[in-house]
Length: 364
Image (tube, rainbow, N blue to C red; front, side, top):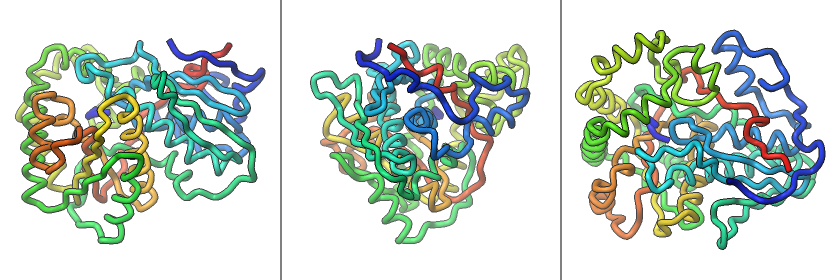
């Protein structure tokens, strides 16, 4: 989420059939634009439980690794981690992985009402590696956050620098605070500049870490062909970068992706933002991390519904030595700063891609 063995259970026969077209049963897209249209098409009201899963796959997640697996039946969806997609350099304790699961859970819960289900998410405290979402049929009901699921984006670009209204700030704070998660909004410029200092410290530490850089480069999709082939990772288009042959991009990377250049970019991003949101929990374990992911995803959906963009600034949360420093500065020293997000009004960039649900559903 930054820059940036599953389960036991049963799936009902035929439950994984998808009403709307997907990459698995449609011609492979020839262009990035075609792939975006398939990935981010509106939710199909008649799509049933598979469409709830698709909503989950559209959630935010670290490096767009999509580290999840699903088991589907008519009355329950179970989501758990795909540890083959973990990022041990940036996320050694799997914090972001489990926060990503929380993001997917929240998308599914928000989508369920519009798709004709009551949904209740339950984490098994004896096995927090998985979350069950119990489903009961009901008439479809409008949920304004459902439409935002297929429009949400982590926008890695400068915003317009305008402040948000008190009403909108209140709505964002309320959306991001629940289940033991606190959403602290920082909108004063001196405090935002102090946060930027921590971001740049984290960025410098990470860029000097060879393992971190190898892992980051592994997940970069330097051109459209790579992005369409993998349907995951950090597409160049989604970061506002040109599409280049992989061999050329790898040779140029040390010259264009430098500490000073990245720090200057983050300075521009922070100073053009309306504020920074910090999500924190006292429960520094998988249950707390999942809750933090759910809270962030609600925040992101609410922001999207209000026409507000957002993007992660997780470097200080990812560097262990900086976490207690930023927590102390913010006055939340008894809590872990789980996720850090800038927000404001600005343009959309080309969305990232997702694997089809057939690639993430386990059949039994």
